[in-house]
Length: 312
Image 1 (tube, rainbow, N blue to C red):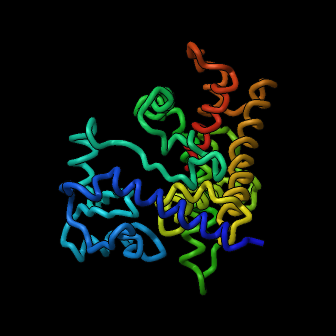
Image 2: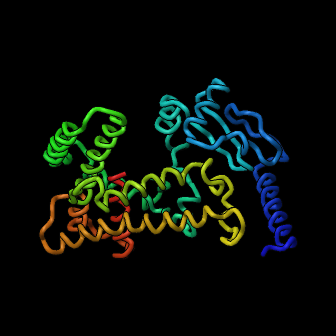
Image 3: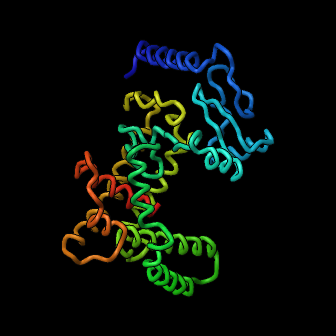
């Protein structure tokens, strides 16, 4: 039972934090220049301007309204710059990458009390860990080394053709075709990463990996979880009304851990017995050099994340 005093306290603290951030970002001083933006509300900014649904579609709609490939949004003091075209992304993130390039920071994903996935290679900020993972990937994903996996791709393509021939025309045919192509790509990526071959599309490794990937993409969307716009919400206790998203995060975190740990341990066991299929992870387990100052536990965690990233 939550009394009125507790509710008032939470509201006052949240309001104070918002005002402090607004002041810190220059909200009461000189306005900074930024790309085109839609009208915003005092303090709240554009929090009500982003409808629920797929963020990239909503951002494209806003870009068309403003007739701009670059859009600026303010979510209660949290600045957000959206690039709606390949040209804008190339100009800022490639040609001027030393200034603008970085990775999204979604608290729903990175917060230790939520999904606890700050080490996911696809969202790492620039730093030592990012450089180590990139170095490992470049050692395998380059025109010379990937040739050894051409046989794998050919096998998957042949199996795909066999499954396509078994499909019958009728309602839902497009979805069936789409599913088969996604399964083929996932199967090839998983075998490349772990040396494991899916039995079928109900294989536990495949089901967990796909569901975890969907959870990851959903967790990064601002419109799905307000904590991505207001990180302070992560401190709201789980018993507070409206915090069901915290239970969702814990459920997704458990599945994420299973999706990452289980295939890694399988490949590790295969390598230990000497009975394993060639894969990126098996090679790294045998030959990844020790990094000064990096413990064996940290190295193992990094290899787990890297292997799963290849599937994503």
